Amino acid sequence: MTAKNTPEIEIRPGSDVYATYQRLAYKIWYAIGEYVDNSTQNFSDHKKLIKKATGKKPKLTIDIAYDPQAGTLSVADDAHGMNMDELTRAVQLNRPPPNPSGRSEFGMGLKMASCWLGCKWRIVTKRLGSTEEYEVLMDVRDLEKHHPNAVGVLVRKNQVASRHYTRVEVEGLYRRFRGQAISRIKEHLASIYRVTLSQTRYYCDGMVSL
Image 1: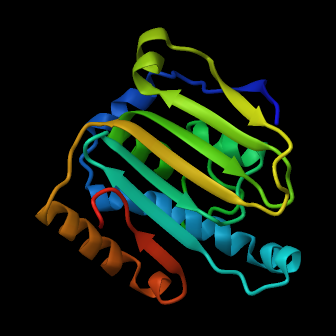
Image 2: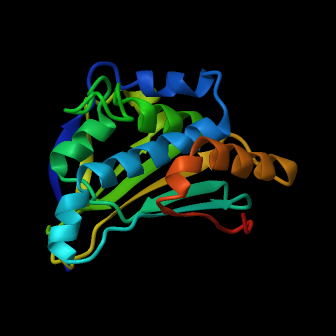
């Protein structure tokens, strides 16, 4: 397996804007919900392609893992995955999806949620049929301090073409969630996605046994 840097993703205008999302009036279940929205939309958009490629009825799994000791949150799915254009749209500001009638209407959810949750986040993704895995790291404090115009993307080649997934990892969480707060998160997510849960394998699991 080899790895190399691909052309960078431009993050204009104003890479320091990402840091301002930390100050949003937000709720943790809405932030996590942004990831669930993206996962379910990606799955819905490509369900027929997944079925054609696998020959099986498509099923979506979303795993949410929270580690209070490490201060990390991970949300992983086995939807269709992203190509480079989709990854670029996930990172850049003000890049709505081609179909604005879906759940990700303005294309801001993942970025806003990740910057609100923690100071550093990455996306790791591989699209069905591709042999390349992409990884991009967004260090919000570095963006605020140095104002870069672009971020690099790591490409891992020679991956298994039949695998497909996206994983968002957030480090340096600004908030910790324990006990009753975790129960409330689970209750709110179950309420928000009660219809989706009836059609999707969905797990809210992790280091704290959610």
